[in-house]
Length: 124
Image 1 (cartoon, rainbow, N blue to C red):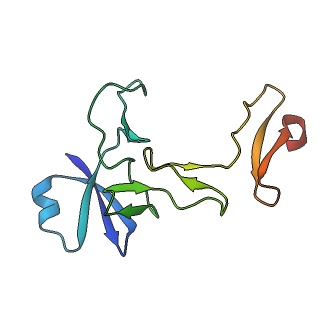
Image 2 (cartoon, rainbow, N blue to C red):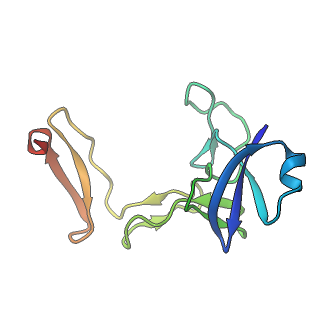
């Protein structure tokens, strides 16, 4: 069995697991997607690259966009300032994210187009 995404007007509206023969009987555009493909890399069961063939850049999720020219899926744009990496088909911020620390994590702030540190203690 394989995963298939139903695409309407370039947007993924459904994802199913089915046999190819069943999908062929369905109406609409159903495009195969791979649960093991992320960032245009095929990952093994351990979550590490395994040298397998990546299928359509990323595993399709509901609301994802299918680019027929590039034959790939990507998530909706998270922020206006971010750009789509044409190789990985993942969104990238204009400023690299700092590493999270034990004391907190970083969250994107579109207003200042930069990362803001959130202390874990501030979450209470």
